[in-house]
Length: 372
View 1 (spheres, rainbow, N blue to C red):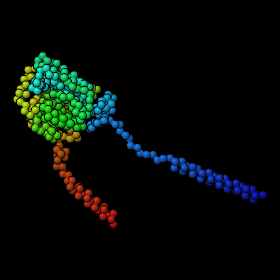
View 2: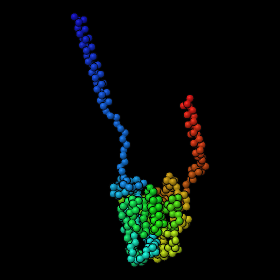
View 3: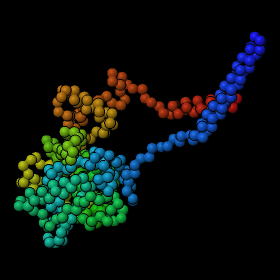
View 4: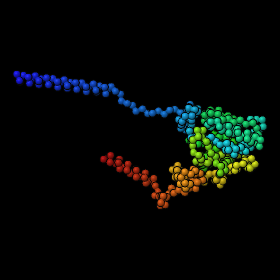
């Protein structure tokens, strides 16, 4: 009887074991089926939002800040480009505008068009008109003048030849990307083909660039720099930015090659000496002349890392919490040259040819080892 009971218990245990094994295998099969039915995840690249309009070939990056994103404009914009030209900058070139209009317009009743293609908030046209009105009694313009300043894609208009038949180009182009070069190429091309003068307000370092020298060949150029005590300061519509501009701006004025420069300069000096209470702006007709009047430094412009060191050193000299250093302070601040270390010892010269030959020798050794 005891043997029979043991056999029954053993038979029941074996049955339970077989049933558990069957369930285990079935679970494994179901799990494999579920895993195989799932599709592997694809690594999708995040798409950037399209910011360019049809027919647009801008190189600027769009900025997604509230009112200054590309959605507010029919073209890509950069938040840091939205700085308005001060009215005093227009007042400085007013006698030159008056001289050009007086010489190039055939009739006093014929309307002249001043073209500003880069639109921010429309303040540029307002300030220009205020400058004209303030000089109406003292030295009025020789003919009726209309300012063409609209929110339109300048580069598309140029490509499609839809820009207005203007008489003078007066603008402050965006300083980011390659806007300065493109605007300069357009202005010089129109000056050579149609005799249209241009007045571009750009950073003073543009005068030292190679593209400036190449583009402005065979034309007469005048630089108008503000007085050293009153540099141009720009305001952002949202009130952001530095209290002082990190660089000085200069008017780059292009006139025809046969212009009487003496008469132009006399008109400029006569107007400012008679009607301007602030210091007279500086006049230069070449890069060397601009360097002599202090409109730009004759030294090679430092790279961003060197300029940051110069700012820090100038701030340390002026004291913590003091006003930001001026461009003159930054230029005159001494830094170790690229061939010296901080302790004054000569820096070891880097030889790229040795580095390339060492790379080639290493690659040859690796290839010979793989062949073996």
